[in-house]
Length: 111
Length: 117
Image (cartoon, rainbow over all chains, first blue to last red; front, side):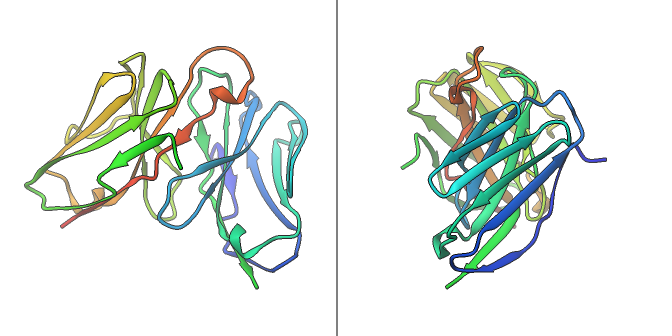
């Protein structure tokens, strides 16, 4: 079983839709969870950062962590064509530990 | 604009060439990383430097040789590469240390696209 799993997509939605991106993981020791957005031919940029379980909201983006189910989600409200990118989930056990990335989900928002 | 800059952005090299990728971070971080990103595969951690000391080498072939002269600069020296080494090479940095703040997260450069012919 892979440590972090993520549906690669591609996921295609109409502009204005609510998008749900998800990752599952196998290591219950993960405590730090991140979402990165990567535009084509660019490096990943940090989008959201959460510690332990719970929700975190930043504008149109909400990150959700359910440690009991080993499941994290990123919700995008009122999706825009500029949200079209690959979204990578990432996690680590401690602040010293290496970051484990998911393979990424490709999202396309159609005008 | 990223606080981690990589050069060159694109590189084409033959299998017998020697070239280097350069990375500079302007964030005051004390840890730097090289990652490899190939199509449809998760990011692969190659090397980690913390306080200029290599702390991790994930079984990377010796044709890849990292160098970290100081906490702001990181190089990846390339020689006798293979076509399967063609990928996006990403440099990243972070501030090590305790705490749950976002300062412990990793910030990436724009990447260097490498094509080996």
